[in-house]
Picture 1 (cartoon, one colour):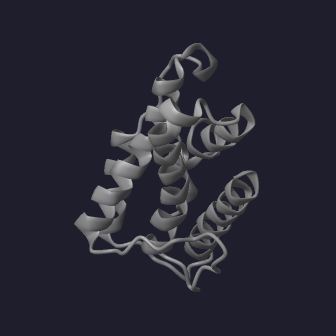
Picture 2 (picture 1 turned 90 degrees about the vertical axis):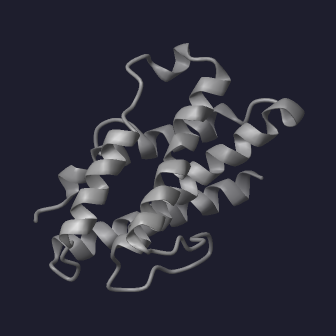
Amino acid sequence: MHDEFTRRMDAAWEWWGAAIEDSQEGRWIRTALERRIIDDIAAATVGCPTPPEELPWIARLARITRWAAALRLAAGAGGWELTPVTDAVPPRPAGMAELLSGIYAVGEQGEIWRRNLRTEGPPPIAEVVKAEVFLFGPGSAEDLRQFFYD
């Protein structure tokens, strides 16, 4: 499971990075709809002020899974398809579908952990922390709007 998690996280960062880079380099110019949807994602996924280590497992995993739900709604609203990113190279220029797919991979991992919590117990703490770092805090998906110059 650990190798699969590492591949998923590496791919999430790669797809995220491709979309942000292509936007910052002018290869992807966001539309008004894309800007609005990113604002909606930011509003729907606001982090919890309580430090994660003080939350019960179910609440920590719920913070991560909230991203999966928000991104499914965003993709549906914009007509983008969420693509599995593990072991896949993002198409270039990358845009909204690639950005959402990369972030979704992390939220989807949270859903897997949450689904397996009762039968397998808590996931490895180091993996949960990596997912939280990707999604929450400075320089993370939570700061998504700040990565765009348009």
